[in-house]
Image (cartoon, rainbow, N blue to C red; front, side, top):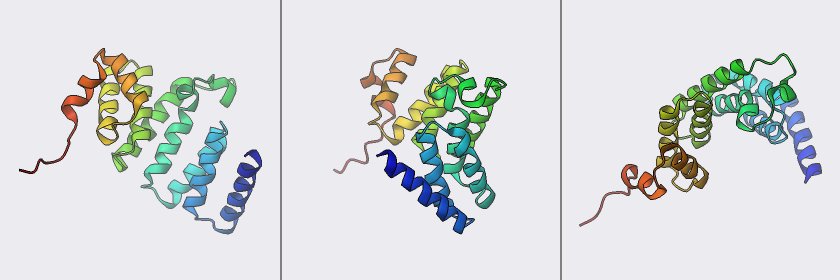
Length: 172
């Protein structure tokens, strides 16, 4: 598995070297870096994508996740970014990028959920609840989100889904 990822990473690096504007290769390589707990390697790729495509919601989401990686994954920021890291700046940047991602693609549950979790860190529980609810309207099968929303609201899961769920028009 590790060698597969390594060969995939090398192939993507070659592809990027041969095609300076290959957005898909950059996204794939950045995702590999993120999966390898290396947001500092992923971030430049996301910025390059935005140079080619300033409205790329996935790149904004990637940057939001990269900036907020230590917070979202509960890894000390200094471990990823060095001792001089400003955790408040990480939080602010992450929120800005995720909000932009949602503006461009309001149905990206990854951005909605990450933003909700960052709002919780900021003690913005009402905003977090709103983000989680929006995410559940898109995909109700997110059990982790249901559990988090239940903890935040104190409301049983079955009540959380009862009201805002559109089940389609009934035929008579």
